Length: 210
Image (cartoon, rainbow, N blue to C red; front, side):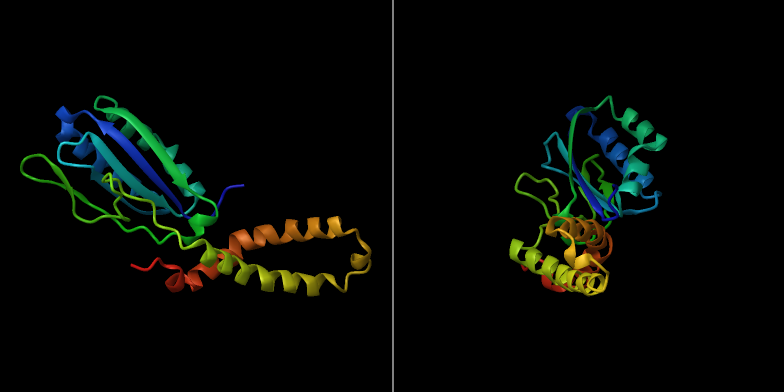
């Protein structure tokens, strides 16, 4: 089942140092192309150092469907083929699942080229790690995540109990069967509606403190 939650993708690329100017234009072209797709929430890219061959990119889409539309598009395929001459290797990772519910929204980023052909970032999405790579947004402490999930699960579970109590024979069903029915109903409710609402409502409290 595809997720309707935002997905953040972090990519590390090794670039031929003799083709920095081409790589700069190529990366920005990719950002411009992705920006036209529905669900695109923002991106950022940065080089690990002035003479580094490691380039790092972070981008985010509203959900899995919009991310797949971009990743499977002919435009992205064409764009990747244009970089085959100077991109030596690529590695990516995604943040999905429970921690993804607590991500801060991504912000846009525009890369500019200076007079010497070097690249710099006019703005940046997310924090930068010790190696110069854009980091995935920091998740709140585990205890805050637990409290948030409980605040959503308790009222939903309580309401479900009141709704099912009047059903004839419900109380006589085996415990495992009642638990199965409860989780089958409440898991998608929690995933697609309750938890997104609760995390949005508690965004200020969940945000990591400086």
